[in-house]
Image 1 (tube, helix red, strand yellow):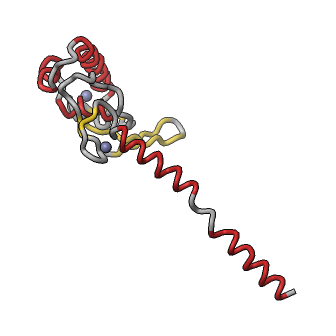
Image 2 (image 1 turned 90 degrees about the vertical axis):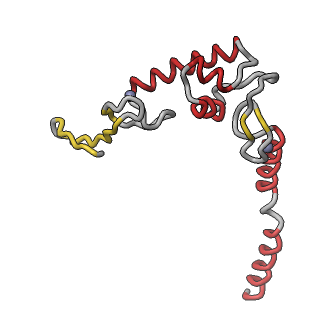
Image 3 (image 1 turned 120 degrees about the vertical axis):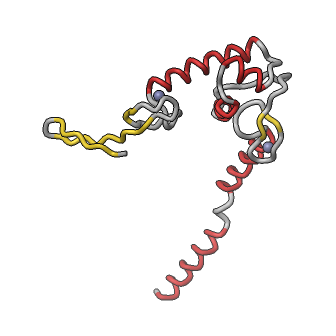
Amino acid sequence: MLMCYNKGMEEIVMDVRNCRMCGSLYNYIGGPYRGLCPRCVQKMEDKFAKVKEYIEENPGATMTMISEECDVTPEQIQRWVREDRLAFADDSPIGIPCEGCGTMIKSGRFCDKCRANMANGFSQAYAQPEPAKPQRKTDSNAKMRFFE
Ligand SMILES: [Zn+2]
Ligand SMILES: [Zn+2]
């Protein structure tokens, strides 16, 4: 919902929305917790701190245990892992699938192998485009010489 306020001379357009968690109206600003009011963002940050502490103290905890102990949905926990804010211990039973190959990983979006592949792909993309150029240059040089 868009609302316009006249504040002195300048018109301020505010994007006012209902918070997904508590339903209260707030001025939408985006950010990592889309759809939440500043108060609920703060609540989520508190929960994040709690989850992080819980994982550190209980490296063997399952997703269900963390979710129930900290009162956070597994989806939210996964989101934090994807954002690289949370990482599970190597011997933790929890993992999330790599977005490239589906291998279980402990944090981020891709496994080491996919990350390495992507890095190679990038350097190849930067290294490749050159070879065709010199040919074309001599061509146009030849043509120019012809017209001279
Ligand atoms: Zn809220
Ligand atoms: Zn992978």
